[in-house]
Image (cartoon, rainbow, N blue to C red; front, side, top):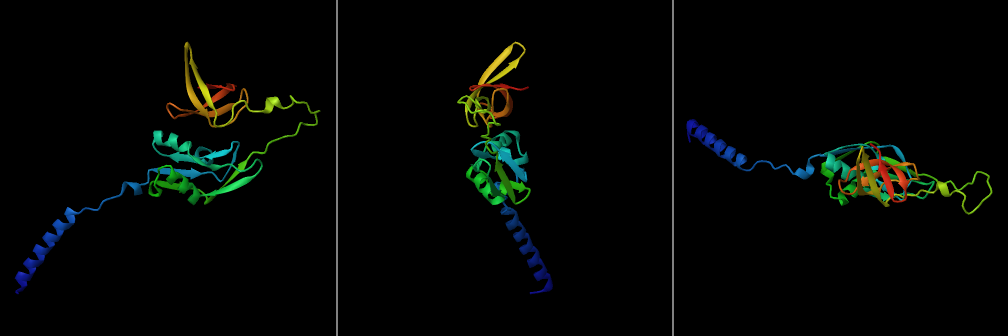
Length: 200
């Protein structure tokens, strides 16, 4: 074969190979595109029996609707009062995966381990004589996980909807609540054992 014939053959093969590559473009798996960036705290203190993602993060970068759902993901059980437990990134990633998120979609920033401390229960009576009613005011009237009525007032308008307490609180305390209709996390004042007034 002449040099000219060989050159033409190379051009034809290159052209055919080019068509082959264009016919089979590289597919990017959407599961491997980072959509969520989570920055963990180094150490946190919790009150309830469960640890939620919203309690252990500094920040979550994600779409607003997805962000609200992420805050309420249960990561695990809290340690006993006054005790602590450690959560590492791998464990947190597994919990996110169990809630429908793929590892390739999530980037977790911060130290490899986070220390979660549960607040100790103060059972002392400050030297006062014990009576059956002592300390009643210190008990929370709403506990984490309770379903409550959320009240929103604006001038002459009053709206009542349902929600879930994300923290425990006494009367007059401010706690975080989840609006079970909009899935938004709000802050409100504890009015009684069934009612939280949303703080504007």
